[in-house]
Image 1: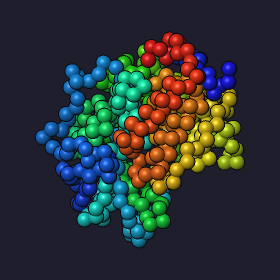
Image 2: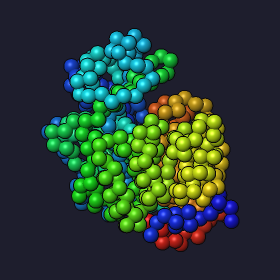
Image 3: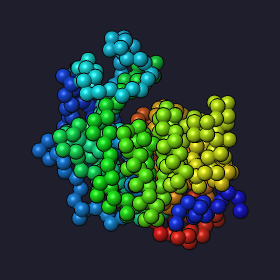
Image 4: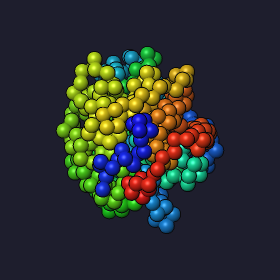
Length: 424
């Protein structure tokens, strides 16, 4: 049997027993009550008002499902994005095109400089992009029951924390962690210059504290797939939380997926990444540069070589290579996935969307890797062909319907009788 058509339960058996206009000044975070998400789907939702008198609210246990299809463990940070000119960056002594961590005072200085400017706020982050796309793909009982998607992380007991929770909830992603009392929610200021270069300034706030608390322990015990965001390895002592979460996930029969997140993050925490991937991961998501970084390959090495190498250590490896397509590596054999054609508008979030397609295929019991990769490529192409990083609801429904039709009419149905997959 070709690897491209090999049932997924055999691949894992070796391992397993939205936007709002904001005006912020004086360094204080104020989230407008009226939200204009930049996503047409949000126009259909009721208005979300961040009410400080309700800080700390989270879903009642009685309203939550008994089991989660996917649980994401990652950084919860609110993105502020705006357009500035090079002179603005020079005036603040910020190097264009870089990403750096700033403290509370630096963040306040930058926000004061932007006082009066109109820009956008969103429940940001690579992981949340993937979770929202997955929730929308699985939002209707198409090809199976509607999917239950959740995230755990760390937010503060401030208006931005409630804003983050509310925005995810509107996208059918439950943020389960309680806020940190007197904590400050992390933010990322994204400044884009006219030459399309993005400068990112991250303030971690309480997102830098991710503990293995009873909430996380309880959720992991009833999830099918745990997705760990690689950026967490940037934070002090989170390796302990990640290891414990992965151990418990494996013990409960869940699959563990890891996102590479960033080349510089891999370089700084190379040993920690490999400790998690080598011991726990069933799936790894990376782009071609990140895959090469994991392998200590030079930029001259092809992504197919990196995919082949990594798939000797991790059951399923997903490697995207921009407009050139992508690869799914299994047991040392990379399967090439052609790109899905589109007119590119904004490539930000393409990899996050691709990961959601892979997760959706796994949860729907797909055995044909080529078919699953083709769906992932189509999801990514839809996001690349629009402004913004979030998969829209109407596009997600169309993709799910098309995929289900293709899957059901295909003769490549697999025997999904393994304990690993059938028990998910």
